[in-house]
Image 1 (cartoon, rainbow, N blue to C red):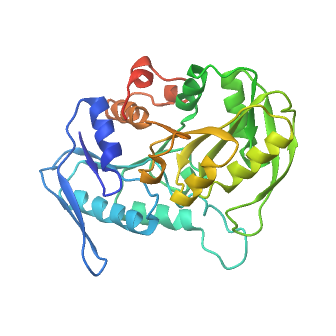
Image 2: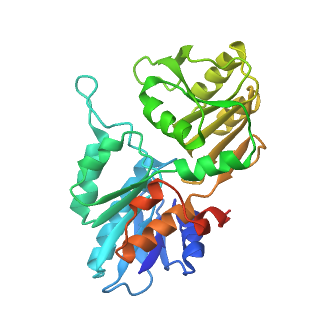
Image 3: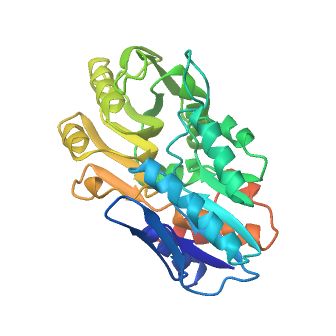
Length: 321
């Protein structure tokens, strides 16, 4: 087994390797002046089970195409198998044809990845879990809930509720609530077209006199979190926190978070985003040990499903950052 990193996945891959006590495979990705991407494997992989780490995050088009080149390169180098590790899948919002004459982008990506020759895919907290069905090859869909929930428990926050920004995320929010033994409040969110800043109109549930933890799968503009935090304050919430699987905030969005009622945002390092590194209001925990443990179990032909319910001590105790 060898682990390699694409251009957007080097730090995350190094953290996985640290958890597994391995060295990162030698490779390089070069972007020429005309925008063309060139990838090269710099060591022998013949007969090897290869794991390529590449989030599709802040530069999704380039990062996605690079994955295809890597798969092709490993296959042509006679790797025994190629597993693509995608901590964040940036096209997951394109899971359906929700209006006339639009592309189902996630399906196009799945088809292209399989055509390139992938053998397995590992992802985490897809925006639309049914995307797993777009692939004919095996997909291991990890969840950050146990990792994030254990962090929340360690903060000693008392008298709190879990808040879902809308009905669409209510099922996942209730899983958080069940794991933490608290109740759920649901926001009534309305979105116009593909607007990144939908409006939260009302709350279903009681937050007056309680601390509130907003949970969601990802945030790009921070608009939903900020609007909901103001609504929660108006409804009598005490301290407000946010907990997300993926964080893709721009520097401007980080500034808006800093000026909001949110105490701090908890997320993972699924996307390497330098914009979030310089504020005390954002706390990043590493999902690399979760992926490392999944990779170890897959390679050893062991079950991965146990990671959905709870994490072994070695995962929880590993500080990858």
